[in-house]
Image (cartoon, rainbow, N blue to C red):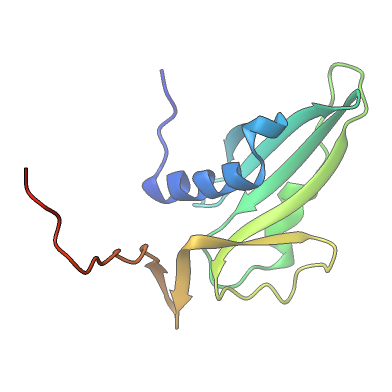
Length: 137
């Protein structure tokens, strides 16, 4: 049985996979955060004998507050006896207010979504225009 996700999360997941590539050994998993629309994405890989774990908060809100990252930075229990290295990040739509975030937190901006005033919009790729129409076969 597959995972049912929203199309908005699918676009953002593609962007996260460009940052944390499977080519570099990253394995991506999604975790729903509470009852809201926010999601925590977990990227994990082995690097030089250590587990690297990056927890990424995906939010579509205009203003990001400190209480939103509380669950993100909460440590997880480790059952295999290793000592993982944790890193944290958030990914937000373009023009979102992240001024209240700590300076050492990685903040990524979505290329697919942005705020136009108070409204969240989908940023589409521009249509490639050609000078001559394509030839029909």
